[in-house]
Amino acid sequence: MPYGDRLNSFGRWYAQLMAESLGKAKNRQGEMIHYGRTLVPSLGTTDMHSMTQEHQEGPNNKLIQFITVQSMDTSMPVHCQEGNITGTVDIGRIMKTAQRANAEALASEQRMSCHIALPAVTPRTIGGLFYFFMLTVAYEGGLAGINAFDQPGVETYKKIMHSYLKGYMSGK
Figure 1: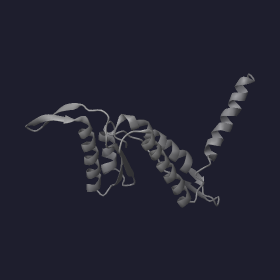
Figure 2: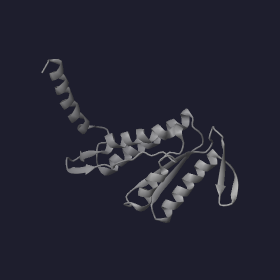
Figure 3: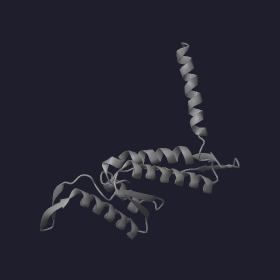
Figure 4: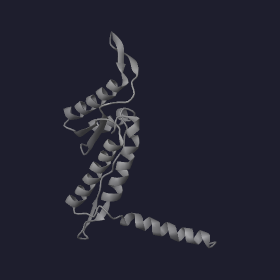
């Protein structure tokens, strides 16, 4: 659950990487294991309200990965009111507070989460983030005894699709 629109596509990329790398019917020994996880990419604070209900009170079988940016490149004062106190708070501080409150709420129910804080959104930090998560997928595949670098399930649909396309091209 990255916090910030500039990281929105990262969650979708990670879900795609996990699904194609770790969703496997068999382990390296050919035994049926049906390994994998269903990832639900979310964007804090956009998806925080709806997803947190599931994370907080649904099955305790998830790890919520928060990704934030320490140095936001935008600033915008937001008028806030909490009870009889009013004032302005910067949008960056609101985003950080939302993530922190989400993590604390999950921890209060013994729900797993982790927090990765990027110093800024730069090619170097985003490249490092991609590299880190690629390594975690490779290591998980190794620990689970599966080949994280093949995609036999994808090959099945490709073969079926190509046979249909050949039929269409030949007028059948």
